[in-house]
Length: 273
Image (tube, rainbow, N blue to C red; front, side, top):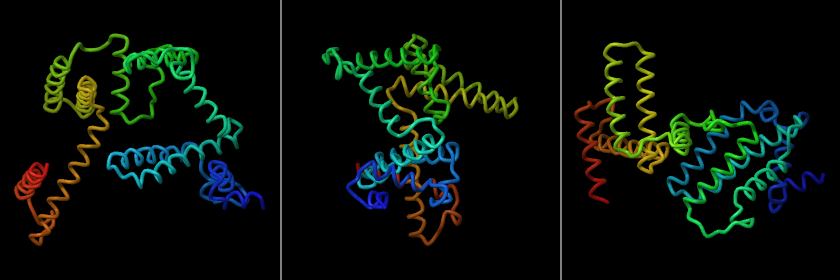
């Protein structure tokens, strides 16, 4: 069959992948698991693959990045195939939409505008174009279009960034630090006197302001937290290694011993820098 020839042609590029996806979704001869999926069941995998791309970049794992980018591309192909089956759009529509968007949003590259402007000015111009696009979609509010499905910390950062563009922002980081102190006090008061819902609300307020501090400091909070997570894993594994040298596991230890080992691991890292 011609389709089989395409599937086994390693130089066929994106058309090969599209045919593989079509065959996987074939209700008569495809994979039962792939056939049963829909947009909502595949969406979590799409998010997971995007994070695995970010993880490979964070670790500098360039050999892995090729595969992770392929996994993420496959997610787009999967969604596009389901959309084509439902009559919504095709993969080529996705490509055309993205290409048109990039051309429209870069008039200084593909149009008559001058390239002789700063990156900051390009960002301002980009936001103006995006605002016009949102208006065309009847998204007239400042915060319209900030995706609901984003991780909450990243969404907080983007909401605050969007509000800041219309002047709703503290003038500098010192005011944000004052607000963090205020929210911390309110969280302590809630812990001592209020119920779980109020504690959760105050904790959320504190996280929200912490995201804003990151923005004022030029730190993307999601990336900063990923880095902190990686550091915690690295140092805790160091504790486990030192305990293993003593013939012990964490369950055989106590907080005092593990805390001392944490400090030792931290000191070794500092000395190696």
